[in-house]
Amino acid sequence: MTRQRSFKRLVRSRMEKTGESYTAARAMLLAAAPSPDTPAPPLATSDATIRARTGRGWEEWFDMLDEYGAAERSHREVARWVADQLGIEPLVWEAQAVTVSYERARGLRAVGEHPDGFTITASRTVQVPAERLFDAVTNEERRKQWLPEGDLRQRTVTPSRSARYDWNGGDSRVAVYFDAKGPAKSTVVVEHARLADADEAEQTKLFWRDRLTALKAQLEGGEIDA
Image: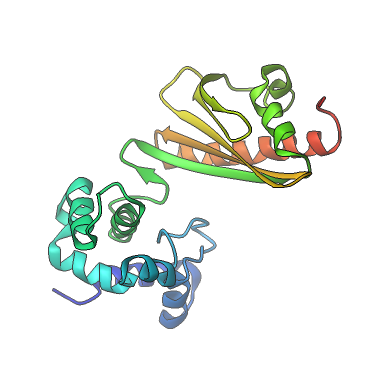
C-alpha cells in the first residue's frame, strides 16, 4: 500500500482549496490550522500535541491505519484498534481523536460529524462574572431577551458550570458551558449536537454565533437585569 496515502490525500485536498504549495499545506495541516473553505481543521489537534500524547505524529498514525485497512472498518473497530496500540480504552480522547481525524482524511466523516449526527460549537467571552452569565442563560425570562426563538427544555444543570437541554422538542441536544476568566470576565460555550446534516450544522452555528453576540451585547450594556 502506498505510504502516507491518506495523509497525502488530505494535503492535496487542502492545496486545491487554498492554492498553497504541498509543503505549506502540509505544515498548516500539521499545525491543525483551518483553511478559508474549512474553518474547522480536519485534524483533531496539532502534530506536536498528538505526538506528545500518543508517541506518534499524524503521518505515522495514518500510515498504520492504512496498513490496518481502517477505511473498510467501522468507527468502533478502528477506535478499538487504536486504543489497543496505546493500551487505553476506546472512548479515551486519544483513541477518538486519531480515529475521527483518519475518517475525515478518508472522506468517511465530515468535520463536525459524529455517529449520532453533526455537532457544532460557538463561544463568546463576556465582561461579566460567570454567575451573571450563567443566570442570563438558565433563567428562562432573562434568556428570552437574547434567545426569543427556540425552546430549551432543561435536562441537567451544574450551577455556574454547565446546563444541558433538549432543543425544540426534537432529537438534538444543547449543552452550555461556563468558565470564569476573572472576577468580571467569563466565557460561554454552546455545543449543539445530533444535527441532521452539514447544512443544518452550518445554519445552526451561524444562529448560535448571532445569539451569543446578542447575549454579550445585552449583558455588557446592562440590558439584562442582574
